[in-house]
Length: 232
Image 1 (cartoon, rainbow, N blue to C red):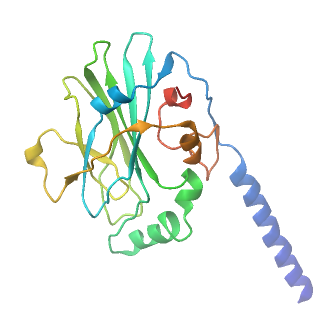
Image 2 (cartoon, rainbow, N blue to C red):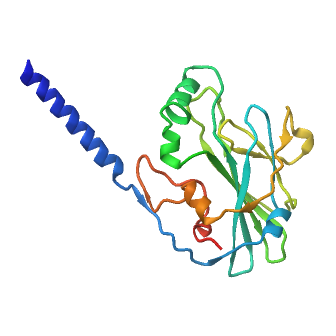
Image 3 (cartoon, helix red, strand yellow):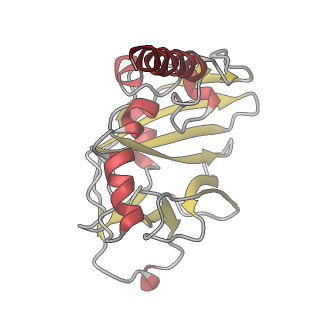
């Protein structure tokens, strides 16, 4: 009996050690070198073109808005606006939302370990060399189901004649966005999340663990653009 118990202990310890090693093995490598862009900082322009986000009490208000920016060789300007929520939580009833709250966003807090504290979502606004908005990029929920365990992200790129301050509404419990083409189509108790953008300083960038040179199974980069990896 004692011999069998010792074997079980040895096997369990071996499994734990193997898992510890495997989970720490890098799955992807990223460079922090930024090519074809040079970082800029312009608080006034950032305020001028800041997107407007509409949200509800259910999804909560973002607490801060940070930005980083860069120019390319053609004179185009790129602003990445990062909206910060203290947390994300699926309040929907059901077993899958409960498991998400217990395992991922709360309880064991796997999300915090994988990405970092809080919830940060990004909207990119591109200005042409004449200072006109000609492209926006963001993530939206694909086939959104609040009763599911997770939300599938879909990247959206819109080009053409876009207003100076494009509007978005929060479309899911994890704060992905829908682009608002027409104010009349906004249904529900959505209110503007009025925030003034401030520069995403290096200490905050590191505090929120935005960029990781090595990703593992349980350590992932947060949503950002390559040109943001070098601050102004």
